[in-house]
Length: 406
Image: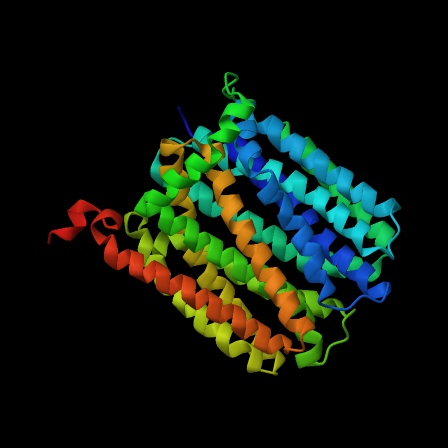
């Protein structure tokens, strides 16, 4: 089988459009919260509603992605997201519960969509190196969409009404659906039975945790996205306070987006900086990211802050891509692509939910946003310490046999 470049390019585009709208929709909700007098930390509550479906639906979405053609699953996920955004146009914006419900619906679409966007990659590539490059590209396009969704989306939200912004999000989801039809419908496994497969979900968790490589990757990617989720919410509130910008100034979202620029560069550079067989060495970049996270909240110069956020993103991009690739390659062989991504989503979103909840709690108790960011950095340190311990305890299983002899 030859690598399907046309299908891959279509996948990158549909992913970009969908993820752009995901991130722009959060800014629309942030604007609605501000307009209706809610506190800045209330945004954490709305993001928690987005993470919840990843936990509740995790046992089902993997089998769903494996049973049907994955291009069909991508369409279904986007349709659910579209429904959530349309709901945002009509609900009472003074009710945070209804805003959370709309973003919860977008989260349901995202959790359906996610296993397919990663799980289809092995079907469109022919070897490990192609898969590694495709992973780095899909990660980079995702982060590019986050960048554009936060930066460009922030400009759109600042220049339009919230209703108009919501309509633009809906149109982007529609375009994403259209592009998906350029991806071939590769037959899934119709013999899969949801109840049976869902009952095996926790067995899949156990198998992936027992394997040193997938254990390392699950914990590593989960720790990264936990920190990323908290930082996105916290920095959005921190920039106006520490750098003196008006909260409605679109420059706030542009500064926040510099982290995504760094992640894009890091994701593209990861295959050159980290050999896949030595994927565990990406932990070095995790520690460098941690140091920057602990320092930057105490900086109050815009240019230096931008440089730090750019560097944080770069380190994070190099940190996560090798682990993502190894997790998908090993996990596909062990339990299947869809279930591997579902387990990964389960772990990542539990940690993002916990991180966002802890952030909301400490800020509500009067802790400064800068200190809340530092607290998240210290939590990241605990995860990195665990990963370092795993490298020492399972070195023979993490390092290729041929590399142990010189």
